[in-house]
Each structure stands twice: as C-alpha cells, then as structure tokens.
Amino acid sequence: MPFYQMLCITAHYPEYRHIKQLVEQTAKQVMNSGGVVRRIYSMGTLSLPQRMRRHKEYHQIGDYWTMHFDAAPRVLKELNMVMRRDPRVVRCTVLKLGDKVEDVVRPKTKTVDRY
Image (cartoon, rainbow, N blue to C red; front, side, top):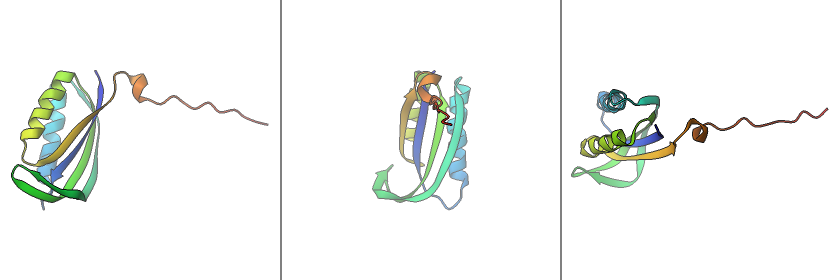
C-alpha cells in the first residue's frame, strides 16, 4: 500500500467539535477500508494566504491539519470524493510520499570516528 500525506484546510468554527468530527470521520474511513492511519497533526487556526471560496462561502481563516496514512488507491479516490462534498472542507490535497517503506524512511547517516 502506498504511503500518503493529506493536508486539509477546514472552515473555522468557534467550537472545535466540527473539526474533531471531520478528522474522526476521515480516519475511520481509511481504517474501515483496510488502511492504516500513522499520524494526525493539527497546525491550529491560521489566516489563509488569500480569501478562498468554497461551497458558496468566503473564508479568510482556516484550521490546518495533516494526516499520514497507508491506503489503497481506490480508498484514496473515495476519500477525495467525500472531502470535496463536505461543507467544512475549504481545501484538501493528498501527496504520495512513497510506495515502500524504503522510500519513506531515511537511511541512517554513517559517521566516521576520528581519533
């Protein structure tokens, strides 16, 4: 299974529960489809680089979060469809980090002891 990173910008709400529900829904969809969620990281609330329009609303502030996961390509297609339809999502992109563990893990650096 390929290793992916999803970066998502969600609309800012005064309550945190909207974002929590979206993150849980996304992670459960990956896990229920046989994928593995490796890491979820929140970058917090930030102002957007420019005013963005999504689902007939303009946004100037967004909540940024990332999720690292392993999943089959068909799961990725389903996930993209769900994220596009969700009104809480302003922007979402998925990057493929690698096909194998060797592509993702950096090799140890070799050091030479000088006496």
